[in-house]
Image (cartoon, rainbow, N blue to C red):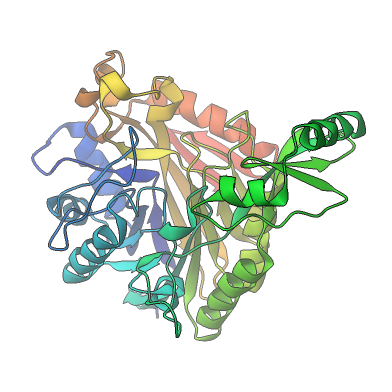
Length: 411
């Protein structure tokens, strides 16, 4: 076993096109960075339209890809993908089966979806660079219950789907607002049966009667202040932590992954509950925690000498101009993280390499279809991205030094 193991991590890859014929210098630079690692990892933000077919289960935000995009990711240097995200079920169980078939055919290390719950919740395990690596991947939604994998029972067949960390959004209000909401609920005659009907096709959420009010699909909680929070399902959390602990006990370097869309109103701010989940994963034995969902670059934190990457934003982001809400420049900027671990699973070095999807020139155009691939950028743009990243990471105690358009973590 070598003294260090280097893992490359990127933003999420929402890929719809075969990008292997792109030969820009900036894109070649990205490939060179990824190939410095023993293992390169991304989130495949999608589902495959393959041998099992499928039907769109979403409206405007539906997305599926042909199997060839997996060849493109592999050619780029990726050997590991998380599959648990809000697009994984866009074609239903058929899409999950096609995705698994095509990912397994290519030999990717993968986790996060399965033919049933047991498979979806299992760690993906493989050997790279002389190290045994495990991936435990979760999705926090929001999403309908039927997108999440289920095992067979005496009365129900199994369901292919996604590994869940159930998160229930709660809107916190003060005493006065809470009593007004209670009055509204009572005056319109909104009952528990109404909540059950409005929650379909899901089961109704659990409501703490004295502290919470459920109206339609919203849960309001009595609090000292106004805010938004989530309730974390304890059984789901315990189950995922057990998978992490089991893989760590087997000697694996464990990557814990979470995809979610429960962002703060300020996209750059890390919600407290995410930090708590990340640290529980590391306490259970994960060598690092990686998250996607928030479409921007969020800070890095080092906890117990192990990195937490709260969001690396986007790496490949194939969206259509006429439908896109993603016009902010920061949505198209990120970093590639090269994380080097010692034999004890602790971080011994970390560098950050800024990228802009489409490169600096394409970012000047509103035609998003031109933004096909991530590109390393010149030192001026790199320093701009890194200074913002360094400032936000410093608030969480991480010290990043910038030199030559690259960020270096000081340990």
